[in-house]
Length: 168
Image (cartoon, rainbow, N blue to C red; front, side):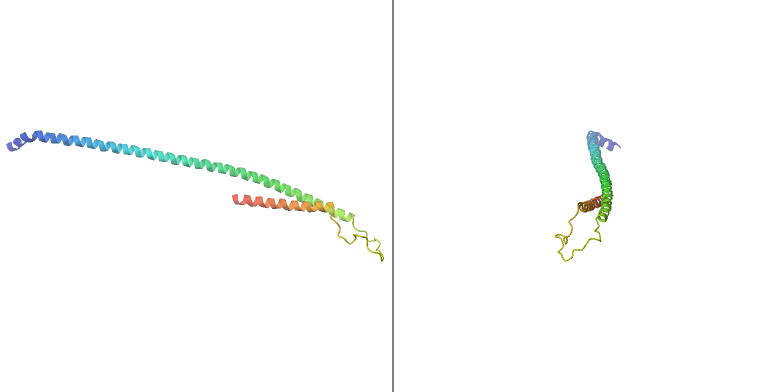
């Protein structure tokens, strides 16, 4: 045992310095890496929070745009339905006027029907213009105009219906 004590008596200052140096290096290096690791975790958590915030804001913006589009679509659909109802009412009114004009035309044609007892012209020539086709009367012109208007209204109605159906 004396050899060991003699050896320690000579080397103890070196061994103490070595121990203090190892302990100090471990303390400094260990804390340095732990601090870097903690800073890295903090920055990663902050980056994740910023990313989640950006995603949340983007989703809220998309939701707001979708709500605006939906509100606009409902407004347009309501407007088109009102126009459709107005066109249908106009069409029905036009059809009623056309039927009434047809009735008036029938009554007018009966009232001016030629009398079968009209005397024939003997050997004389027919009166000028007797073989010409009769010109259209104002009543017939109104009937044609009403039929044309009815057709245009029906075309507009069909166009509006074809616009509304794909959106449903």
